[in-house]
Amino acid sequence: MDPADWLQHRLGCSFIDPGLLRQALTHRSAGSDNNERLEYLGDAVLSFVVAEMLFHAHPEASEGELSRYRASLVSGDALGAIALELGLGEHLRLGEGELKSGGKHRASILADALEALIGAVYLDQGLAAAGTLAARVLRRRLEELPGASDLKDAKTRLQEWLQGRGLNLPEYRVLEITGEPHEQHFRVRCDVGELAIAAEAEGSSRRRAEQEAAAMVLDDPALRAPR
Image 1 (cartoon, rainbow, N blue to C red):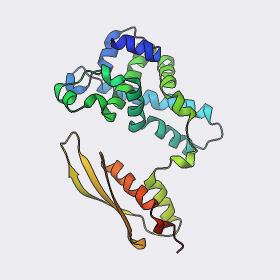
Image 2 (cartoon, rainbow, N blue to C red):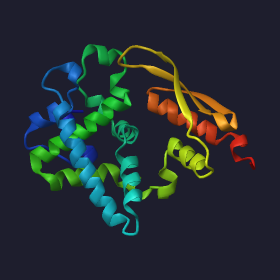
Image 3 (spheres, one colour):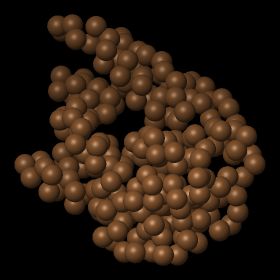
Image 4 (spheres, rainbow, N blue to C red):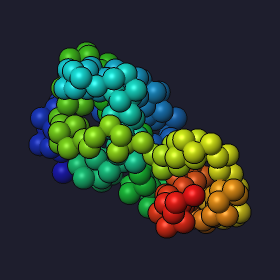
């Protein structure tokens, strides 16, 4: 299916300037006229649009809760999953290296392209059209948001648990980094020295590995034992 037809069919969106659509779907590996600048613009537009949506959808939420809601909706993982569901990767223009390495399924590339698409719609038709597109792709996740307290990441929850008991913060150490520069893999250790609890985890980024290690520590029965 032609990218323009796909966009109209899946999202009810069309372009006045088809060149903007082409640029939004072009990864930097495929040429200099790529989507990096549009991604930058789309990130800002999406952040504002989502902030406004949440402001009206959750009138009782605090500033901190709204911020956590927004972060969960516009995270790279969330946008990458949405783009994958939409089939956006099938319409990306990628360089040969990225194609061979599975770039059209990579969350970071998909998330960037979705942001670029929103940025392109903003340039093509203005903020209202970009907001309509953002609402369409995020509506289901907006409706399914959990409680704000459940959106705190594992590192934050572990930190708050320890601080609430007057204990020192955990120590995170990178044990190993493997893979090519564009697709590294991290192994990380999280230590809570005062409780003699530690966990090791792996991830495609240092942050993800640290989050997984923190989650494992939180699940350790010893952490919940009376002290």
